[in-house]
Image 1 (cartoon, helix red, strand yellow):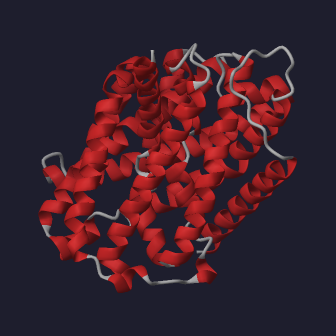
Image 2 (cartoon, helix red, strand yellow; image 1 turned 180 degrees about the horizontal axis):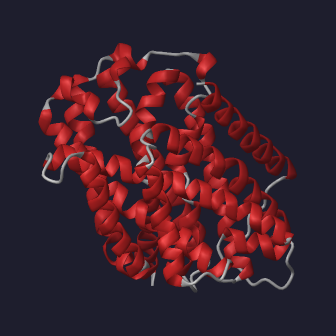
Length: 382
């Protein structure tokens, strides 16, 4: 039974980790180089703790209610239709921004690996979008079968990048600090670490093993956080102020083409699983919470991101910063408020219960809202 439990935690944790380690990890080194390593590491630690609490809170919400909802559905149940509309707007806007970023970076990585055989980066945009549309239509089961293998491969490849880059690290690049810019990386870091859409899927993967659910959430949250931090420090340590927005292409001058090719392959592995989980969560929000037809939900989920790219949206750092700020300010606050309600449900049967002082809820809400407003203000100014 112990081995079975460990296997279950591993699968469920891998599902969450696979959804987290995506395109966001490639934006973190760049914002580290902008704000400086010391301030960025401090902010990273604070955000990681906050994200872990949000994941655990959402996990308990899913456990206590036992409903087959997504976040908008829970908001409707406990706070009414206006909250549902507000939450859906956040999920949809943040989801579209995330999917746009995934498509853009995936196309760049495919272009690095295979060149212009489909007419340049935009040709790869169309190819990647078409393949992912088929994956979203196939659903979660098709992903779950390969997710743990892809996540394991991803961790191995990221380790290889760090190992090859290590001899090229210049200590002076890790001694930078611009404390006045400490909050600049907020949206990108939050986007890189957050895995809210995958929490209901983790619950499904670990059903009837309630005590293992929070363990899977902790493992699935902290392992990607550690990997992201090590990756960011390795890249910035090598390329310093020359760190590129996608992290990988900027390494070429320091470590040669081979590592860039490996990095592009890592990027594709990371992006595929995260893209599918994000897109399926968005589609199922429209289906389960808004009763939209399956085909219509698929067309909206996959059609809108492609439309924005065709119309000229091409900056993936801004896209993930917006997604992170939106997810944090709206979705994070919604989860905190929901948790204050569901933890008092007397009829709920659960082996999973957080015991948090009220001040933690207040600090999370204020921090999420201020962080989101700051990030959006910075994007508007610059």
